[in-house]
Each structure stands twice: as structure tokens, then as C-alpha cells.
Length: 108
Image (cartoon, rainbow, N blue to C red; front, side, top):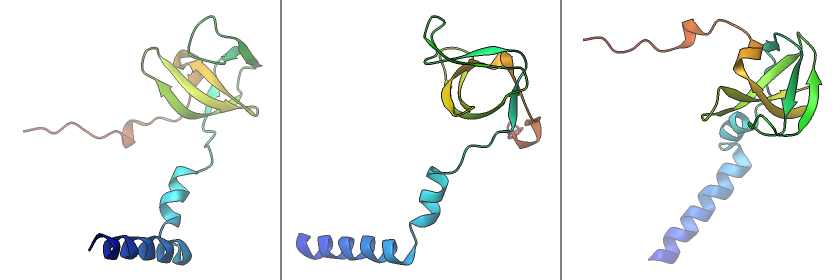
């Protein structure tokens, strides 16, 4: 009985792989970064979210950055910029107004 289910599962995985039913999900996972934010001042792009972590690059004011992660312990974002990936404090980043995209709280 279990062998029959295993065979069906393998068939489904292969069929989806050949016909592309997995492609949209992978497309979302591997989406290219969107550079819709810029630095507000010259700032150090750091290896980690720690203040004393090594500097990867100095980013001039107005450098386009693409958010790729968030550090919940500080007000930091992991960003791609100038071919590097590192951390910046959000106070050095400005970008589009996202208020229209944030869900309103449910009101009774």
C-alpha cells in the first residue's frame, strides 16, 4: 500500500517538474531584488547587524538598495547594493510610501 502511494507521489513530482507546475513557486523564491530604496547619507554596509562588524563597502548618498532581509533585534535591513549584500540601519534608507500596501486593522 505504501509503495503505491510513493509511486504516485514520485509520478506527481516528475509530471509537475516536466509541465512547469512548480515554476511559479520557484519564480517567487528566486525573484530578482528590487532596488526601490536609496541611502540618505554616506553609510557603511556591514557584514552583520552588529555595530562593530566589518565594513563590506561604503555606500554614497543616493545609492540604490534592495531589501532582502530584516533583523528583528535592531532597526536593520539586509540589503543588496553595488554587488554586495550586507546590513544597514533603516534610518539611512528612504523609499516608496508603503502605506497604501499595509493592511488596515480589522475594525468592529
